[in-house]
Length: 120
Image (cartoon, rainbow, N blue to C red):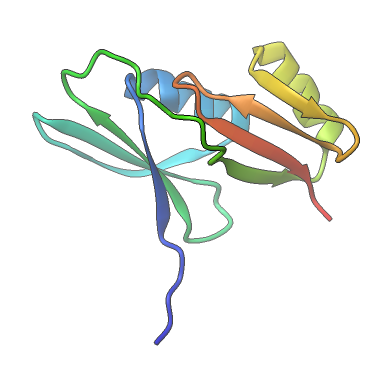
């Protein structure tokens, strides 16, 4: 029996604000969406494979999600850390830098963290 990653899901308060962030900060593009009166789901991809990020907005929800104290995060690699860091500084979304490890984290509008790692 074999399994492959399909997608990761996070819930967001404002799908349009989140789409703008993920497109601008990470270059993710919309693959497809599904909308009902109760929710909106948008799948995003980076163009390199089948794995997707699923953003879900529950219609009518207004309070921020409690992300808890865990350190769950998504990780992205980039061939140009300097250009990426410069872009993210300009966007004001860097929330933590670890120069010793050569990585940093950005935060989306809902408080989710993404780790930015140099390609090796």
